[in-house]
Image 1 (spheres, rainbow, N blue to C red):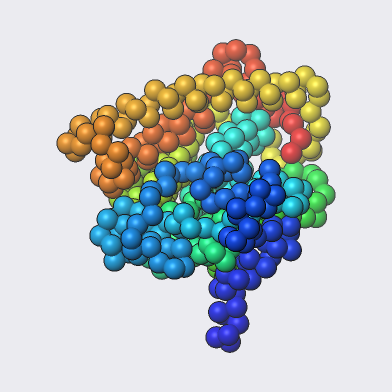
Image 2: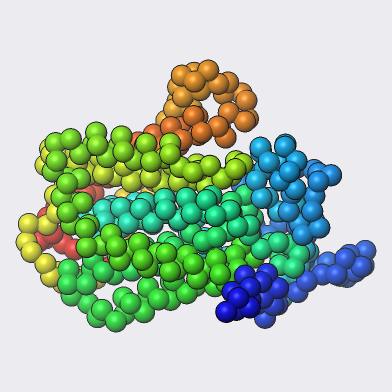
Length: 424
C-alpha cells in the first residue's frame, strides 16, 4: 500500500506521461547544438510557450536545492518566495502540438480568465437561478481546497524530472489539486440543477461533465503542475464537499435572497473567513486568489439580494421543467452584444475600483502603495482583493443587467421566461 502511495506521488510518472504526449526532454549536453533547440524548444527561463507567469523570477539563490526547490531555511526565501521552482528547470521540446494546445486549454478551465468569462456569460444569457448555486459551491470548495494546500504544504512536482509547461500557480503548494476540485464541482453542479429543470437528454450532460473533468485533470499532469496523488485527492475532496453542500443549496439560496440581514451576515462572515485563512508559512498566491473567489461569491449574493428585494430580477414565474429552445440568429447576436458590452463595463469598473481599493486599504493600515511587498501582506491583500471582486460580483449580477434593460437588450429573465429561452 505504501509503495502504491509513493507511486502516485512519484514525479517521474508525470514525466513519463509527458513523454507519451509528445514532450521531448532536451539533454543539457545538447543545448550548445544549434539544431537541438528548434522553434518548438522551451527553456525554463523563457516565456515563449505562451503561458503567462504570475511572478517575476529571481536570480538563483545560494541555498537552492538539487531537486529544483528553494531552501526554505533561507530567511529571505522563506519570507517571500514559498516553494517556487527554481530556474534550473528541465528544458523540453513540444513534438505534438495537438496535445499541447488541448491540454493548455484544459488547464485554463481552472484559471481567472475562465472564471471572469464563463460565469458572467451564464448570468447574462443562460440561467440566473442555476448560476447562483454554482457560485456558492465553487467558493465553498475552493476555500477549503486552498486552505488544505497551505495546511498540508506538499510541494508540486520538481523540475527535473518533470517539465514545467505552465508556471501560472507555481508559487502555491500542490496537494490537493484545486483545478481537479473545480473540474468536478462546476460542471456537475450545473448538471445537477439543470436535470429536472430543463427538458434535454440528461446523459449528454453527464458525458460533457465527465469529459470536462477528465480533460482538466489530465491537463494538470501534462503541464507538470501536479502528480497523480494531487489530482485524485482534489477529485475526492470535491466529490465529498459538493455532495455535502448540495442538499442545503435551496435553503442557503432562500436565506441569501430573502433574509433582511443576509448582506451584512454574508459579507461579514465571508470576510472573516478570508482573514482566518491559514498561513502557508510563506507568501504565495493562494490567499489572494481565495479572497478573490470568496469576495466574488459575497458580491454575487449581495447583488442577487438587491434584485430580489427591489424586484429587479426574478426567477421565472412558471414552474419547471422548461423546454430548451435553440436561439435564433438574433438571439445569438444579443448573446454576443451582452457579453461584450458587459465585459467592457466590468473591465472599466475593475480598472477604477482596484486602485481605489488598494489606496484606501494601504492608507488605512499605513502601508505605501509604492512598496511592492505591501500587496503580499494579509492586512492589505485580503481586503483589497475581497472588496474589489465583491464589487464586481454586484456589478455582474445587479448593475449590468439594469444597463441591458435600459438599452433594450435584456436577457430572458428581464423579458420573461414565457417569451424566450435560449439553449443550454
